[in-house]
Amino acid sequence: MNDFLTFAMNVVALGLPLVLAALGGLVSERSGIMNIALEGKLLGAACATSLVAASTGSPILGLGAGLLTATILSLGLVWLTQSLRIDHVVAGMAINLISLGGTNFAAKALIDQNQLSGAPTLAKEMYWGLGVLAAVVIIVGFARTRPGLHLFAVGEDPHKSRQMGLSPIRVRVGALLTTGILCGLGGALILTNAGGFTDGMTAGRGFIALAAVILAGWRPGAAVAAALAFGAIEALRIQLQGAPVFGVEIPTEAWASLPYIATLIALTGFLGKTSPPAGLGRI
Amino acid sequence: MKNGHHWALIIIVLALSIFPIFLTGTPLPDAARSFWESSIGQPRGWVVTLRELSPLLIGGVAVLIALRAGLFNIGAEGQMLVGACAATAVALQMPNVSGAILAAIAGMVAGALWAYPAGWLKAYRGGHEVISTIMLNQIAVRLTAWFVKSPMKDPNQIADTSPRLAGAAEWVPVASFGRAHLTWAIPIGLLLCWLLWYWLRHRVAGYELQAVGANPRAAKVAGVNVSQITTRAMAASGALSGLAGATIVLADQGRFYENISAGRGFDALGVALLAGGNPLFVIPTSMVFAILNAGTSGMGLEGIPKGLSGLILGGLILIVGSLRTKTGGSDE
Image 1 (tube, rainbow over the protein chains, first blue to last red):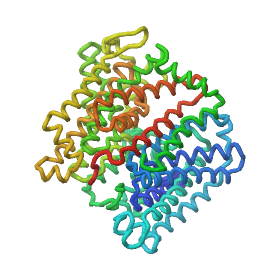
Image 2: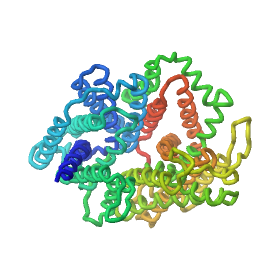
Image 3: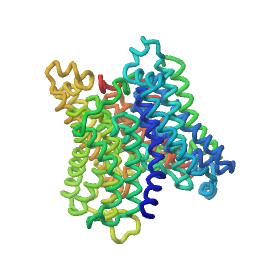
Image 4: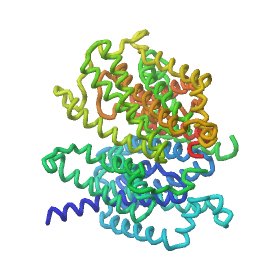
């Protein structure tokens, strides 16, 4: 029983950053902006949180910096894709590159390495509460509120929604602002879990979150479930440490690949056809 | 330059590329000199630049062929990794000249197999190739990491690395200038650029591939087998990426280790975008990226972290992306 409790706690701890990032990705993609830059936002937020918390000694300022960084990167994606008309994939990939490079640079150049591991952080439970809140608000908001419907309309068909009197760009700015905040929280939580910033510490979690969104067919409840399931896989991987399951030795890399394999299978559509928002990635 | 947004982007990118240098306390002229000397200003720079060039040249052609068919091959990174891993496995078994050739072929086969699911998903199941190649990249990183930790690990090393290839399995330089070697990878890459250019321009299949990239619906109406071309273009792109990965091992590193491609697959996408769809332009653009990679890694000696290259390359990709908004009808 005690084992189970530890496992459940691990699922929450490892799953919630994925839930936060997946919800962020969902809001963005629902508004029609393809978001392969979740990884970059998480990493940027984790780095900024750690740098500012370590240099000022204030975990709140740290979180603020993390939220700000992720939001800037997120709104950057709107600017790049909407005003500069850069392809969503190109813009997202460039943001990932910039974030990976920028965090490597900042962590090495700006601050004494020893200081980074001692950065003060806020309690994990606060993030957990915010994560649950965000999940509830988005699941309910998607189906039952006006902004939720606006988001849906703009993502499906920006031209028609403009004729209906909506401003697609305004809806998208709002959506990506939300994405930025959620990814900022997710990145700060990843940092809190790890205790200190290391180069490339998000280790593909942004892509796992993206996988959760796709696996869930762009539905919020399912996305939360998928993200938690991926958290459970990570928790199992850590708990087992490569120990045999039913007499079969499964390397930890195989566990780590499971979310991606599941998503590839989901893309075949054999498990039931889901379709992305019709206007995703266009304009 | 359509409007002020483009200028704003250029200013932001320049600021992101130069301002960080001030933060390190290294005087700008010192940093610039270090960049120049470690890329093309001195022979020791050419050693690194030429080494960086071959995977970017071949990888650039690889991404470009997919791009012309309207496919974003974000998966070049993963295809390079499996290509490098497969090439190492073959070259370790056959430490002779035929092994060196077979290893390159093994790299191509592995890369093609790794890209094939993405093409198939796109062509027959409507799965977006960007999503599937991102997933395949992540799996490739972990699969090859496992290979080098378990079956392929050199037992005499503490670090996870394959044994060094025996002399004959490594590619010999075509020509040497001091310590700067021109390996076979570079003439092969140049030939591939020309071949692709010729094929796209003078062959029916090449024309059909471009038709699919420009407008799949129109191509279909005109009687082109869109699904087949999409699948084949992706597999061909994977094969070339795999070859690029193989050259990293065969012509440069001489062994395989975790994450050996180190982001070159993403650089290759930048190379192809900058070339603007023309295979011959891959030659200068891959050179630009090779110089940037060599120069920024050389600046590491001046205390400037290597992350700067990500800032510069990412910024460059954005500027190129803003100049050509649509790189092929990926969906419409």
